[in-house]
Amino acid sequence: MMIREARAEDFAELYALDQACFAPGISWSKAELGYFLKYPRNFALVAEAEPGQIAGFAIAGTLRRSGVLLGRLITIDIRREMRRRRVGGALLHAVEERLRAAGAAALLLEVAVDNESAQAFYKRHGFARMGRIRGYYLGRIDALTMEKQL
Ligand SMILES: CC(C)(COP(=O)(O)OP(=O)(O)OC[C@H]1O[C@@H](n2cnc3c(N)ncnc32)[C@H](O)[C@@H]1OP(=O)(O)O)[C@@H](O)C(=O)NCCC(=O)NCCS
Image: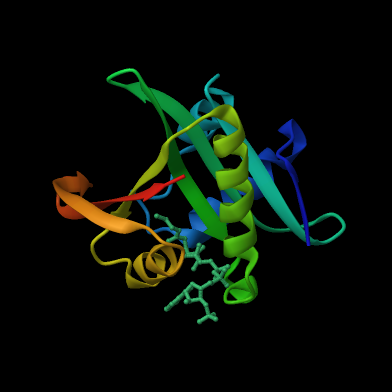
């Protein structure tokens, strides 16, 4: 498995992968994906199982809250047939390393209350549940907020 920076030419594949990972309305439009990829405080990493074959990707960024630098995991998307093979774990690890090196104190994320597999994945990787945001997705699905100290 190789983890590398996402490149402009990955865009179509990342978009298709995000569409395949999430329900309509929750998956991003091309404009939204483009925004998250280009936002200056964000970075995007791609996992290749075989050279040239994208197995998954993650987008994360940093923010400052009360003077403290924090990381935020914006998404992590693994191709369905590649799940439960530690691709997500490898990408999350690379994201954490990158944020730690930047001086981030913790990593924050939101996950849909009905996304049990992602919640299990984050728990397995040491995230604790912090709170709940009502109607975060489509105005009707709550999000759980989770956090991990880096
Ligand atoms: C959640 C997701 C990123 C996990 O990626 P993955 O590559 O399959 O995860 P890994 O193989 O690294 O899993 C590591 C551990 O996490 C836990 N885990 C992962 N998927 C799980 C599932 N479906 N059910 C229960 N536990 C799970 C397990 O403890 C697993 O270890 P094990 O396989 O030895 O039991 C992947 O399922 C995915 O892309 N889902 C769709 C997109 C999504 O919901 N992203 C999160 C948005 S908030």
